[in-house]
Length: 105
Image (cartoon, rainbow, N blue to C red; front, side):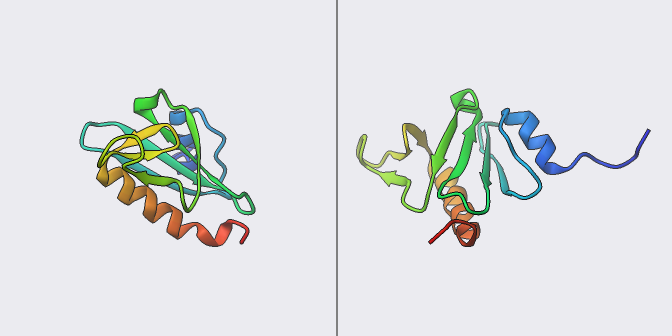
């Protein structure tokens, strides 16, 4: 038996059911309601992948211009068809900025 902890990528892939490797830029967020969000950007891919536990871990493709405010309803923040709150949008924006160098220009 090994005392080594599982890699974070393996834990998050198991959590959201997505394909995440050690080569991905990975972020995890737990919101105030206990809902988890997982972000993964693979080098060379135009978009990152986002999973949200409140959306049954459905995968959403996100990019630099994916966060929208007020298109569905005044003040409502969306990413694709997913409604997110301000702290989630701030976290996602940070993940997108931190992984921008991995996306083709």
